[in-house]
Image (cartoon, rainbow, N blue to C red; front, side, top):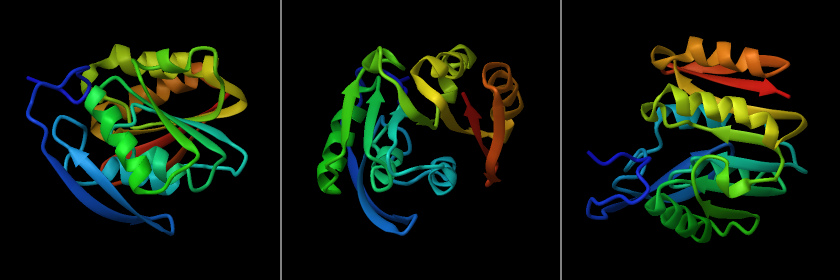
Amino acid sequence: MPHYYSREPQTPLKTKTIEVCIRGYCFKFITASSVFSFGKLDKGTELLIESMILNPGWRVLDLGCGYGAIGIVASRFVEHVVMTDVNRRAVMIAKKNIKLNNVRNAEVRYGNLYEPVKGEKFNSIITNPPVHAGKDVLERIIREAPLHLEDGGLLQMVIKTKQGAKWVKEVMEDTFAEVIELAKGSGYRVYAGKK
């Protein structure tokens, strides 16, 4: 069974373009088969985008970017965005979406988790993590985040309430000086951990 976190999706490529208006801007996104949330902006990503903290001078990492919704919306509010994904199809589609939305301050890199940004630091890492990849992947995302955050930087992530939100919050509280709940709704919670 192919997953959206497979490196090389084998399923035939199908695409569907959607329009989304969020945070005062309208965007067009190409979505693709074997890339997370085909044909729609999922509720968790929507809640994360609406509640994520962004500042004008920031460098942001969209970790596991999928077709690029989080990073592309963030690019309207920050200085620079790096988007990464382990799924080659996601990287290809995210690059197309950057062009489609005339984004000039974002780039997409291929690779697993933090590999493509080795040695780099960000003001915020923002992610709708691949829950189905397992708890060890989620734990790595959280525990390795401080290595890639400036002092005072934020890990912002959304998690389904019934798919381990309590556990995720506990791991974040064990990793970060401060953890706050930015939003909850539609069965999701958005947490921010501050370095």
